Length: 194
View (tube, rainbow, N blue to C red):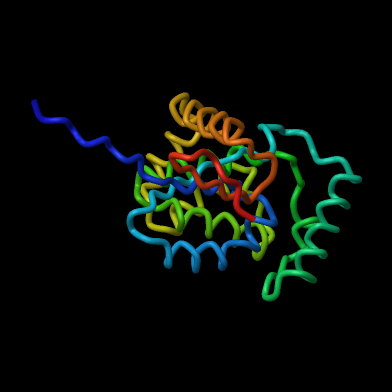
């Protein structure tokens, strides 16, 4: 009787992020460069961490000021990162990133997740538009040439929300507490990467 060889588990790299996380925005050029150099044998899985739940309430002034301070710090420490502070005067700031997370999930179905992440970041950080608003997300999708009607239909579908909840649960199982995060999974266990 022939003995089967043990199957070696493939290593996985998890990238956990939120499209409205300012540190994730600053990390994008590094992540693109790193990803381009990863070996094909390493499976890469993007997970949406969900920074802030759905809310229609305006962000408290103290939170707005804290986030603006984060933006200023990021501009100082991450070369080439620039934010458009007009957002805080032109938009009603809401602490709600789940819509943008769902937009990335929907864009995946049309093979455009990375382009959607970039479009959301540009809308938020460069054009002072609010990706907490469905209309802004649909405009991003249309700008990418996606089927905007299908996109709008899928954006708040039950299946999309379930996918987001599953990804957030996986991020918690990986021990992720902040974004962006990288976690390498091998047969030896989980290894958070700096």
